[in-house]
Length: 273
Image (cartoon, rainbow, N blue to C red; front, side, top):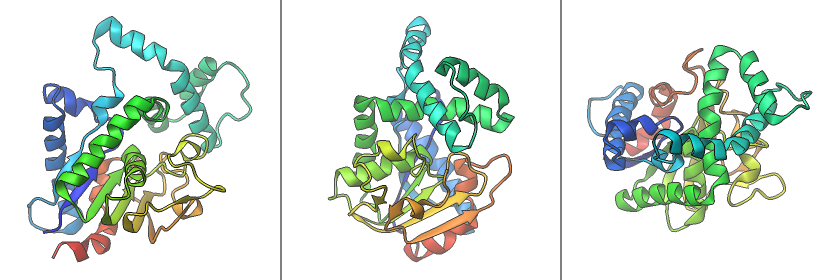
C-alpha cells in the first residue's frame, strides 16, 4: 500500500509530554490516531495508512519548567501579540483599534466568541514561534524533510500549521518529490500573518506549488478560522482541486474531523490499491 506521511498542526505538544518528552513516542501516538481517523473517511478496514506523522511541536516550545518557562514566554509576548493582531484583522475584527498591542490582545480575546478565543490563544503562540524564530523554523522543517526521506511517500497530508511547514520544506528541497500534497485547514493564504512571511516569499502576490509536488489538493471547512481564505487558489498557482466542506460547527479545525471527511476519499483512493 502507498506510504502516506502526515504533518500535524497546532496544539500537539501534549503528545510529547505524555510520551516522556520523546518525539518518537509522540509521533507514533499520533500515527495510530491518524490511522483511525482516516479509516472513517475511507470506510476501510483497520490497517496502517500512515507510515509516519512528522512530529515537530517540541521545537516550538522552550522545554523549560517553572520560572524559566515563564521568562521564555514573556520574551516572545510581543511577537505573539503581533501575529494575533494580524490574525484578527483577517477576521474583520478590531481594525479601528489603535491602542497598545497588549491592551488590544485582551480586548480581542474578551470579545471573540468562545470558540475563537480559545483557538486564538492556542493558534497564535505556535505560529509566532515558527514564523519569527529561524532556528525553530529550521528544526521543524528538518523533521518533515527527514520523515519524507525515510518513508519516500507518494502522499503527504498536512494539517493546519503543518501545511505551512510542509510547503516550506518541499520548496526548501526540490529533491523531495511526492505525487500528492493534501492540505487540510491551511492558513497558508492568511494575509499579514502567514502568507507574506512564507519562504520562499510570494512573487507579485502569488505563491506556487512546490516543484517536487505533482498534484496539490486543498480542503477547508467553511467555518475554519485558521483557513482564511479557505480557497488557496486565490493566492497560489498550481492547486489542482479545492473542496469546501462543512465538518462541524464547533470542531471546525481538528485533525480528527478533517481526516474523517469523505472529501478525502476520491483523492486518496487511487493510491490505496
